[in-house]
Image (tube, rainbow, N blue to C red; front, side, top):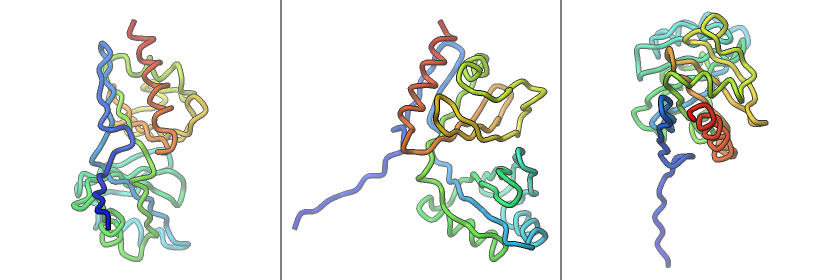
Length: 191
């Protein structure tokens, strides 16, 4: 019988590259779970989120940092949050979130379904403005904001996680095409 060894690979293979004042790098080591609030369970969910992740419940379009597991809770829609965190065991992220939230949320692991790319530096916004329909100006999209959008016909979630830093999440199936679009945009504004 043949013996096989499986090796985990991130969607972008640990990609990291600098273009003048802009750095692009795959954000690895983060787990992502979806937490849906049961009908009528708003108060229980808010309490569980504080107790489990040390975070308050964000409004849709906002994110809130937590004080456990390096968590950040993203308000994706009224009764659905994404929780980004450093799971003690990345292969059991849903178990960690389920233990933290208990019966106050329906949890599904999304970690392997999304590619995460961080763009940061003085020219990050200029590069994104070429391919992103969102207004990323400080007044319209301050730190902590999160939104779904489309870039180059690909679904993307944009999280502004710093003054000149954005975490971009796209489905794993289109990760390479998305990376190419972002690279090209960054290269065009870095010339």
